[in-house]
Image (cartoon, rainbow, N blue to C red; front, side):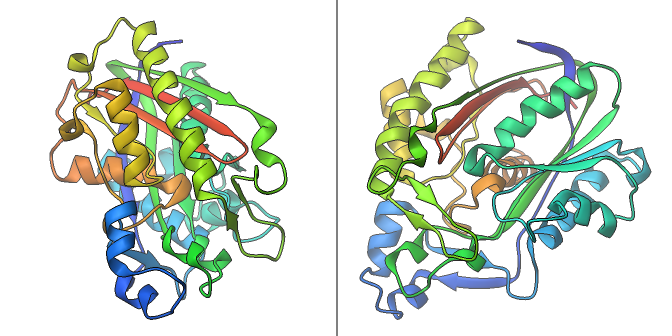
Length: 316
């Protein structure tokens, strides 16, 4: 459902300092090369949190989004963190981030893995539309380096980072989000797309992710565009979750969507899970690729399975 006069007031992101280039992974002798990672995944390097945890990344991204919005942190009414790599089982990473922000506000996490930011967009925008909240801080933050077995080939996929937006009432802006789910992605291997048990490192079936993502992403993007009677020409930018360049290439091919209008953010940061869309959004914003009045589409898919699409008219 299109929510009118709801939009993004501020955008920010943050990545840790430590760089891990592909050559470092090649030197680990995990069965891949720097060239293969770059060619097949579109990743040249990733950032890794060494002395930071997920809430630290979320906190820094939040500060940047608040500054960009031109508001005081006290103007934040609610904090939502989309993460599947929380600091702890309890309390929530959102509560820990709120403490670091020195804010006494309602705060909670959602876990829809790589689809978490889009799930969070549906929550945040609907909460603002009720009039109960003026400014909702939505953060996507993940640090999967802490759940990575660096002795296996799976270590190529992820990087750490956070992105944040302030959702507020904005005249003439509008936004619509549709989310979906299919629990068959929780089955045991080989059907298990991506899983991480308590106290263990993640396990991933990359082929299963590719097959599912390239099926549901084009379908859900097309459905959203059809719902609003939009064509490819009406979309100014696609800012997708970053599961791998091959997924994004195939999705664009199926939709006949121009690659020059797709934001690719994996090259220097890899897949940052729930943070990938807001990080890519912030980069596009900082590079002035987003213009006032642009129509943006933001699709995501995550294990479980979960997926969704946000469509919005960007007004600042």
